[in-house]
Length: 103
Image 1: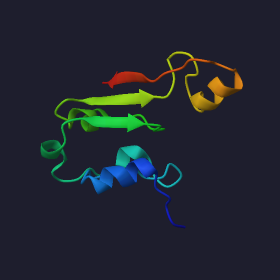
Image 2: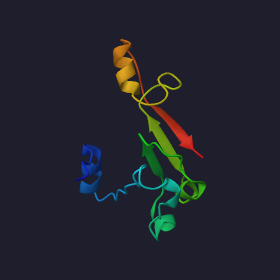
Image 3: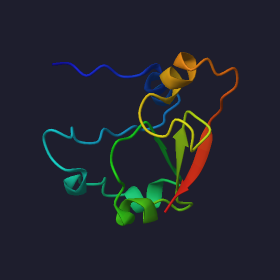
Image 4: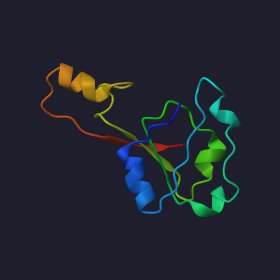
């Protein structure tokens, strides 16, 4: 089965930004994911979007400036999966994006 990548990944790669795939949840736990060898020297910040794993502390600490999580709603409203769909279903006329420092 071929993996379908998002248009965001295509833009990132077009601009020379390396993207990594986390292991599939069904196959192995995220805690067993092996980071690239030069990880701690290469990346300033981690950006997490629509990600269903808890990040191990050593991963977060590996970014020079830490990590942030982008959630497509104004938290705590529509916390969890499908926040955009829930906002549409409920007829919200205003919504937003929450940016959370991961630690």
